Length: 226
Image (tube, rainbow, N blue to C red; front, side, top):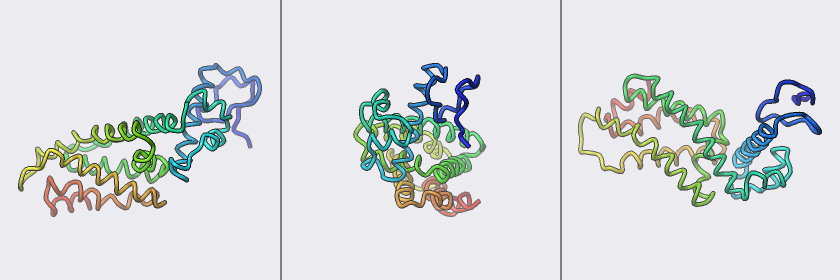
């Protein structure tokens, strides 16, 4: 059964729904938004299958159910589409991170909650996980720059751990960036290998890895496995 609404339907379709052919009476602004979002969704799915290097304008347009001419209405290049998809993915994950961080009162549990939220999201949407962690390094300098900025946004969440740190030498200023880079690499390897659906199983190891510099190995293990 088709999910397309009848042409005279008073209710606009979902923003990712295939629009009915012919005269449908939908506002041009809605049509533009719908087509652009479908192109972004198509690109993200394609990246999950073949990576950025294998994505073509024809394949992206075909996946979105639009023409290449429609693609050029919104984007000049595959990289432009990638940037739009990356920005949308970061925006979605940003809200998840903020909500997860606020869900706990103590810093170690907040960090564990953030990791769990990200891993769960990427397990359910491994194409998104690959786009945000693995592909920025091959998608061009602009996407790489945006990826660096996205990781930088997470630095303050980790830096709060310095306030609860109990012992040991002081951490270098680059510690948080190094930790985040390593976590990103671990996730990227998993999704690129086609094991994105198993990401949640990494939670204990990743949580222990992230928390150990602040809490020590024993306490980090206790929190990670809790």
